[in-house]
Length: 419
Image (tube, rainbow, N blue to C red; front, side, top):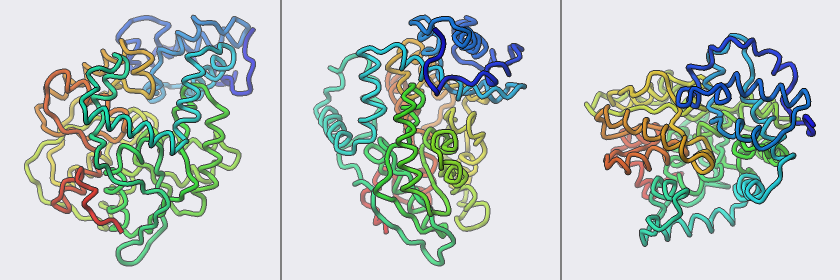
């Protein structure tokens, strides 16, 4: 049957793979299974077969569904195959050709729930209640880890949507902050730290109320039309700022590719920076200070969409060093932790193996604090460290820098007066 949508992998992209196999050692699923069908090369071969007319069936969906979309393969590919775009296109075909109750539920979650503030507030209230009464132990196995990995939601900071925060001193530029979906509801302390640091660095920070979810999870799961709608809404809402700042690695990576997702997205995409880039630049040029070493050790976990997609490796470490920490490396290769959006729910066995391996690396590092710049990674790490009984704090690098700068815990951010 072949392809049926306009979102399918581009023939030139599929043909650009030279079958060299250099991607194989970098692929987490190939490393765990040794299966060609669990490698980037094998998945591209399957896509080429579908393009030639082979059916998009459940076996095809299984091959594509086992991919984490970590895009580590892109870093080592000598032919520069845009594997991420091809995978999103393949999953769009699966979504179109293989409808079912499970996929319709996923479409509702990634395409609608994440952009409904009212529904997200309800979900957050329920999760907060479950934490208060320790009901996570009764949750179904598939979501128990996610509940255990959540930050404490009781008393979380209020939404930052619609607020304006003037620069301290002379304003150098206007920065529009992506509030996001779960970041605004569950990681408000990261937003507070980000806003305070940007205003200290000379930015007027605006958080336009008309923005929505960045659309990354919808795009990764194959709901291309919904992802395009969200991209278009954000392009309209965030246009006009000098910088567009996102403090979740998956969001900043996806928004930097808005030229693919929105007719007018390229101009906005050129303004997008990850928050670690913005703060590291401000430290480098003296707008934010470097603090004396405090002797505390912080292990660094590299989110895939920060390290592999955006090639951002040094900036989080520069921020932590500027905060006075001794940076501890746990995985020089930057292997995926297994979170990968919905992956931990859809592929719990593979996700669990990767999560346990990453938790073991952190335990071996003997650091009391772990820095991670992506919410899904943080949740995954906290859940697996808890299963090992390892008492480690996990926080965004901006939170840790802000904490050292002010002498106040970032996770008490609701007590901070954000202007």
